[in-house]
Amino acid sequence: ELAALGFGFIEIGTVTPRPQAGNPRPRVFRLPKDRAIINRIGLSNRGLDKTICHLRRPHEGLIVGCNIGKNTVTPPENAAADYLRLFRNLYQYADYFTVNISCDNSCREGTTYTRTHILQILDPLFDFRRGQNQYRPILLKISPDLPDPLIDEVTDLMLSTPLDGIVAVNGTFSRKGLETDEETLDEIGSGRLSGAPLTQRAIEVVRRIHRRSHGAYPIIGVGGLMNARDVKAMLAAGASLVQLYTGYIYEGPSLVKEICRALIDDAASEASASPAPGK
Image 1: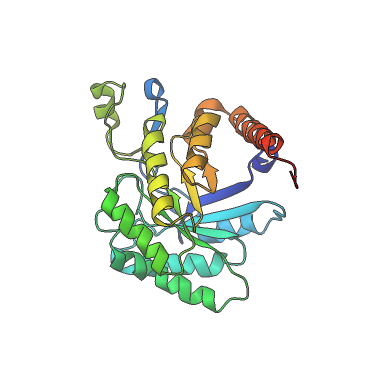
Image 2 (image 1 turned 60 degrees about the vertical axis):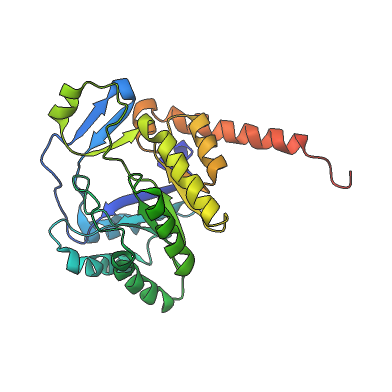
């Protein structure tokens, strides 16, 4: 159904090995003045076995990625086992994998972006993939709240390992520059913010990764893409693909059509402006 709306690929998840209910409700809040959403869902999902049942359904012609994460109750020292279990069991069903190293939407990253922690999770995935007949790309999803030097470190890690790309970015914990009043924000409390306030930072992060990696790696751009203009800016910054979340919630399915038509029109204009072969 989503493919019929104009999406070229779908990313499901975050999936955890065991089902989990997520955080207590309410846990998703609209900020209409800012065209944003705050959520602290807590990786609510039906677990590995149910995900396999869904992915067994045919989806020829549609790329389906799987976003994987650890269960909230899994201690950090056992996180790698959760990721490997998901990766091994879903490998034949998904077209690519996004590794979500944030434990859930209500906690901060802390030390999760250290090289040691990331490699503890990624190395077993790389090892498993080497023994398979089919190649599944592995991408790492990163936060917009990372300082620029740390974004550079994560990019350098990609350059020095078999990591295939980066998904940039997750939601932010920042509340700077919002038009929503402080009282409302205090009532909502914790959670990641997505939507229009994130647009500029998401594009900046993608551009930084693209430049540092010399455009040699795919980047999935996500964060604050509310219209076709935002998508064009993200692609111009170096994204290979884009994802929608909050923009789709606010604008509805017509946003997908708007974006696709704008990109097709731009491609046609560029083609007509190019000199004919041999001229």
